[in-house]
Length: 47
Image (tube, rainbow, N blue to C red):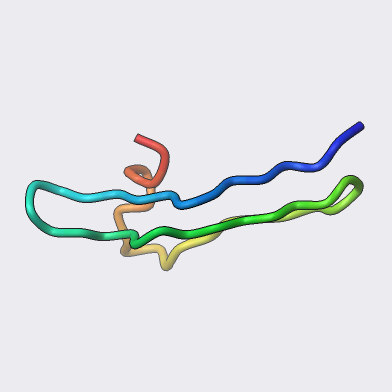
């Protein structure tokens, strides 16, 4: 198996930047959960 590398992730809604260049490294064998507060619009994270 291999790891996962995500680099320079950005998200904006119109002119409003929400995520500013996030980098994530997940090594082979690691277990990772991305979470947000219940009131957050987290369903848009991967839109």
